[in-house]
Length: 351
Image (cartoon, rainbow, N blue to C red; front, side, top):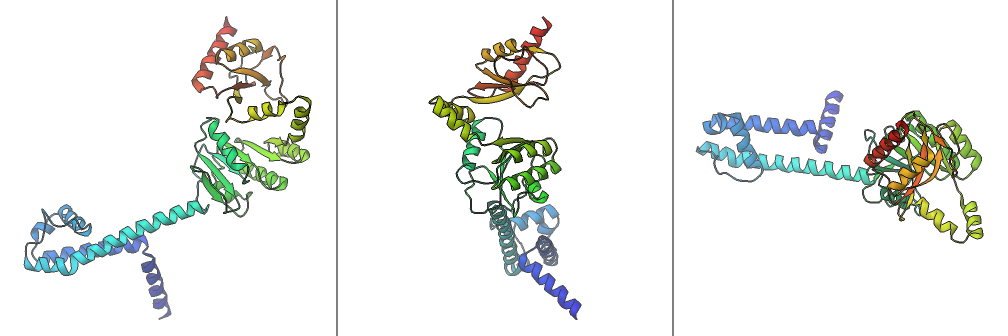
């Protein structure tokens, strides 16, 4: 008896929740019983072809009504009135309720941050939330026109304002592998880490490296020593507040702070972008500068391959393949424009 009681309780639970197997079983049983009853009633036009019978059932269930197909015998009409139509309406309502419930639950999961984007590739992931800064970061990402159309925000709090078009993931901790996987970190294109503390940021960077060894990670630190360790151990680009330096520059050169802020934000007329000199050839810095000017971009600095520091003007005479060039422009150079620029540089080398 206890076994039967457990089976009954389990079945009742699945029936109340309208599990998929229960729903499909009910539909199958309903169609089979209806088909047998119409066979008994002699409704050969309805049951001779399975496709015709399914069409007849669907028009009945959706309340479209009878037109080209309807019961011809008195027994068939009684079966239709007492069994087929009520059953079809009940099942049709149950299917709609199940679909609506699944849709509402899915939307609620996304709003509550319980979504799962582990298979999303090429995303830009922001880890950590600050009410006064995160929305501005997202605005800058979109304004940068760097194909940042898939943005995922990972935070520990549910009481946040999620900008339109941004996917939201919530976790109890930001440095757990499962939470990071849900936030599409494993196949992300770039990651920004800006948490409540340097310790949490440091641990999160290490966890990210367990999932992806190549993704570019930019992380904010308040302490320079922690930033240095994160750069060395987690291979991230550590960003430390330059408010003090900016304040000094503003005092010595009025307006310098506005220039620094403008160059740091893609929402202004011009900002800093970067590109890599492809290939293994050595290019003349003067020629690189000239080619950038031809497409309305100004060469600002260069970072030699493997070097930690960047060089400003006067630039090194030769720039080897793999050198990162930083330029100021109104928008990022399109891949086609950059390819044409590289072709012209190659032609100059071979000339």
